[in-house]
Length: 374
Image (cartoon, rainbow, N blue to C red; front, side, top):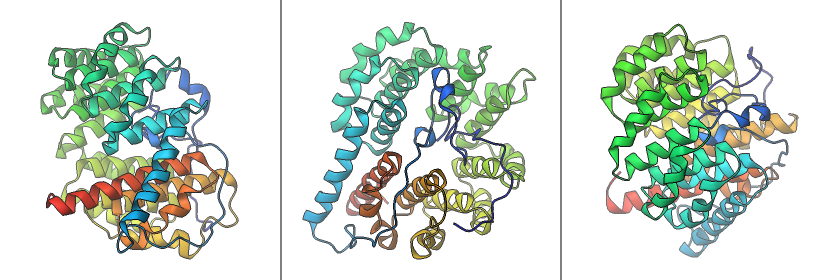
């Protein structure tokens, strides 16, 4: 990776690593925050240390390759996620749950359901979100005890799941949590209000963003939720974050711009493909891919063609490889997906989990193209 890093605040403060999110700082967050801070976009929650070597990529398994090979790579991805669900590391369990919830792998939910009683708060939180995201009715009974969980973050996650399963009265619990004195609860409440998609929450989100008692994390999470709800008023503030002197802030702003998804937001994200920091460029490429724009493909491809992780320490290389896999999942071109088998064999379980997510996203994209829903 080229040595062009700019200043960092010393750790992620955004969704991808600190609310605990997410959905994300450039440096790994410290694990001691896990006791209190459940994740939102969970794949960036924490990175461990190992790093892969850059071997020659396998042939593309996502375009002209035989169907049997596609199945083989998908089976490998499934194995990665299943192993992560049973991992002793709570971060791995959280990340695996997030993959299942966001890629529609409902066949794995019977393995997620027991994690609703996991002893670790972020795992219970993530499992409840997955139940809600996939509207997994068989787990509804397991949600009732969670509505009285000792941790308020778990309560609002369970309330989200109940609301998604049709008991919409529980969504009011999330609204009220935005007034909590606990800043983690506030931040996660803001995230969930954006996730629910109720534009009626814009007023209270704006209040939380401007409230003098809100932490920086809450203010940003409220701003990002407003972006997710299509509130163009946040564009100017997000623009300032995207052009911050701090790389972690820039990544955070790029993700929020992606959530906004407007033409102006997209144009701003495009400018960050020229950012001096590789991780920022990869985040921009990922968000553009999410918006259906493959402009960032060359930035991701360079990671492999120029071996940009060579000479970096293991943690830095792991971060880059995770971000690379996530970008591939959203961009999904054959030139990039052919590298997923390589990433699935990475030494780092977090890189493997991110690659598994990209494999599932590639399958979703192919299914959508066949049904004409793209």
